[in-house]
Image (cartoon, rainbow, N blue to C red; front, side):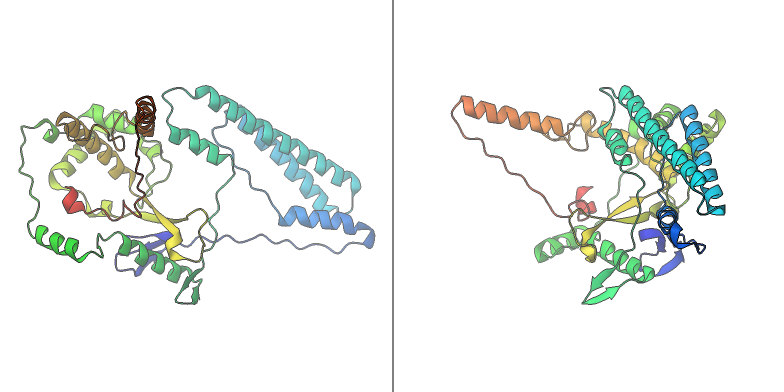
Length: 367
């Protein structure tokens, strides 16, 4: 299921439900003023038609209260000036209130950043650090997308979403242009994959409460899926509610995933340096249900533990492994280069960047 830019789609590409988000610029009517007040009216129009939206994250209760108080004072001064256009004293009072509000914003942001830096330790994930750095750029706004297909411009939201949904589905269906591979795939997939149920194995045992608590403690995403249930809601479950949720997960673990969990909100993100009119310039970001993510976390930890015990991973593999990162590969490469220099030998390194590798994985062959 594809939902680019707030549009809900079936796998066929047809629209089943639309949630359209509009960004309408505010407009204000200016009262006629005397020629001597043209300068003030021009500045007044700039203020009204160029509002600056400022978001504060991770602020303390006291800092947020001060910001709201200064914002209220600024808005009050602006309202008074609106009602008395041309009043120099009210105009000066508004500018002072606006300057104080801006200084308060900067001070609050600087304080929040300093407090965040003090919380960074060796256990802080890089994702959390980069999330805060990106938040400093201000609120993210999604511009309207206009695509060009076969020389025709497409600007209607429904047609744009249909085009993106069709492109994403074609790129993730697992097809290949290699006839030999497709023939091999067709023969292999005639035999369905059947895992014999072995209830004696530890990974088939019912899920435990500590696994659920661990999954909840590591879930910090703020974006819900199609069910609109965020992790913040699940973090406040009582002990009895967690036990009920665990019983439901054990039932799903035996009977299979619900069909609703196979749906996702897909948001197209423009790649850096790519033309916005090309459908191939966008990469999809899928937002699945948070309830599904919790269960996937618990099952993924069991799968990783099983693969580690069986020594399934290559010793040089660093990706998708617990307590491994790209630093391991860099350290290994640096060691090989230094050893080659000391022994007067050559060190050959091959770097591969496979296009759309994640979307084109053959799931049957992988399993």
